[in-house]
Amino acid sequence: MAYALSWLVCLPFVLSKDGAGLLSYRSPIGEDLSLYIFTFGPALAAFIMISITEGMPGIRRLLKQIVLWRVGLRWYLFALVGLPVILVFGTIVVPGNLASFKSMNPLSLLMAYLPYLIYPALLVGGPLGEEPGWRGFALPRLQRRYGPLVGTLILGPIWAFWHVPIWLTAWRAAGMQNLYNVVLFVLFISFWTFVFTWVFNNTRGSVLMAILVHASGDAFPNAILGPLFPASVVLTNNGVNVGYYGLVTAYGVLTLLIVALTKGRLGYEHYQREELDSATAVS
Image (cartoon, rainbow, N blue to C red; front, top):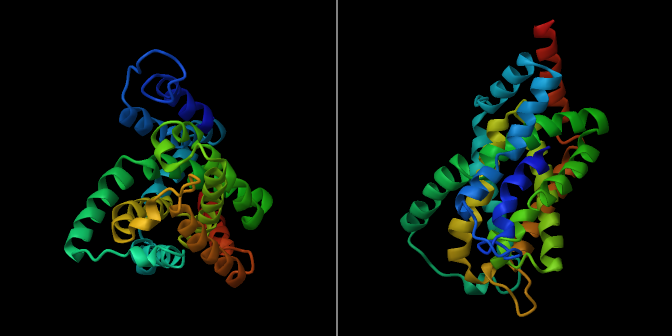
């Protein structure tokens, strides 16, 4: 349902001259509006399914998770500071990126980062429309049925390939017509999914924290990494997006550490306790 709702909204633009140019007509809505509506497919699908299967109690529980902010300062620090540091690490270990470093005024970087984090990424971009679906609805059910490790392995590619329509429009400039870049993108998203699961489980199922991690992970590479390390955002002569190397490295190493340190549980015992407490309170 998430795929259908998002893809159907985006399809008129993708097919038009303004998108992939497969048909000769002009799109009735612009790219920005089309992609903005596109991102809310997962959230809308989640609310529809929960209303059918659980009714108002399920809707209230999801809304409570979306505004669950009392999760401990360390998780906010991870999302806003720790994750960017990890992304810097992944970027500078890729050959050529560190050599391209350009010194910039810290205030200029902050002024570029905060508006991008708050406006396009946090308020009107993907995180707000996606996370109620991927983490609020899909993840708890996948973990319950398959366990945290396998459930996360399943969710990663589902989330990655949901992006297919925008590979044909906005992301063509990022080389998404190149199959190698698609593979790198799926790897990066799949690794990142493990980070989301770990944060979600350890914050008692906070969708708000998933939104913040998503927003930080979207905003920092675009607003800061690109200007600081110009080589990290170029396409090679073969059309390979160098930026994906850094993302795959950063999230890959972090995923290995999380899986090893949690012995594959990804903090699920904390979320299970929260589910049990919620069920007890209801009964």
